[in-house]
Length: 113
Image (cartoon, rainbow, N blue to C red; front, side, top):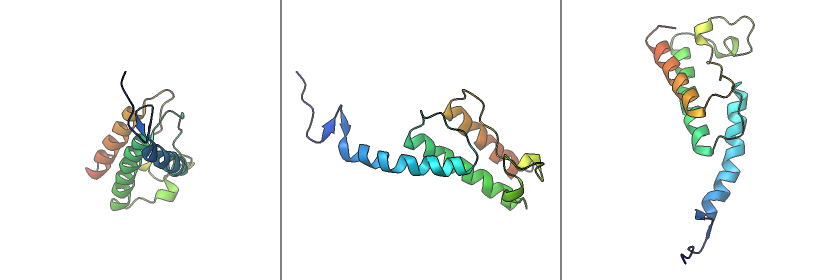
């Protein structure tokens, strides 16, 4: 019979789990402020990857002279639709959405959006 090491629960490090329990709600809040829908299955690492992609996208928009306040997903109408963060599709896996945000950032950086 295998023994679990001290400080673990179900094979997971307890301090690491507590840190995730603290960080994940903060990350969810930051993502929600960007207008992105979450389904509750996203972990802290997924949310961190998403925020990095969003930060890159927003930096590219600002570099091209875009105004993030008038190019929000809920802006009606947006100043430049190409400067609006892509909408997460219903049922879309977080990894796929992160990839689409990264592609959108690349397109803005190249002046293709």
